Image 1 (tube, rainbow, N blue to C red):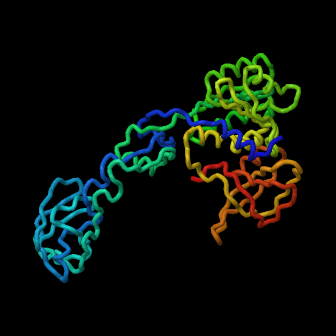
Image 2 (cartoon, rainbow, N blue to C red):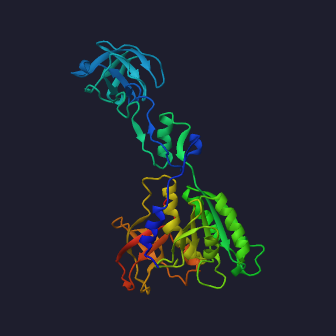
Image 3 (cartoon, one colour):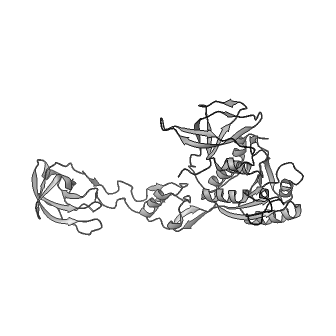
Length: 406
């Protein structure tokens, strides 16, 4: 067995970013920028008012109150450009281009309308006040989003502002999910016994979709037959950039996956990680460099291995340079006990925030083995307990997030 940190390092050292492609901006949410996004013009392209009010010459308001003659109006998007001379003003709306001759905008709240053409100003203004100057947000050609940035709604807004449509993004890797075990059936209607229902396939498909970084290919369930397993694995390796197999990687009579992968030309990188659950996890490279993850068959083992190794690999394959903070320190709300003398325990836990100080806290969830899907359904992730001992309430431990924090 190797340590979980070492296993993760080995996985990431064999990952590389996918090719870059172009997609329409309205299809780019959640994708990762494959090239730096640059401003196609100065932002803003002209001096613009940040307030509703009046464009004035600041020098005219050195002493107030002062009445100025209103000579026109400029709205956002208007092409009107009335020149402001001494003793004059122009009504201006938020986002409108500042007319020539004006060097400040007086807020409407500090003015009084004496007549339709005469405005009384009750407050002084400084040159440049309430004006967003041309190019002050970004200059033409300036990088506004770095390569490797995840495109959330706020980044989509940036792309739209600079005309980046279509936008260059890293391609999403195609990931296959193959469950093994002749005792499994997909769905609920065909299950002769509840123990036969496959929960790993739906869970891992959902986990892949939740990342937003992969194209998921559900390969179904293959029986514990070496020939059938090789046939399905061969096709999956041909079509996928990464492959997740579930079950068949331990030391049992029907654990055929490691041998089948070797016979198909895969090179094993590691098999066995000092972690609980997830000890039998396997990682190999396919004949063309495909990533192959052999996940254990118990549901909590499979999900733990997915979040510890597969999800980080997907982030790197997708070109992400600043992964989201999925690992952070928390304080335990109640004690947690690890009896793993030679392994790191990944214990399901709920994430909370202490309203008294805003610090994240976690409630460990008792699980009855790695097949306890009900305990898994109550958790937001896992607390990491590296030593075999009792961790008292108030202990600070590492938390690994599974559920998105939306």
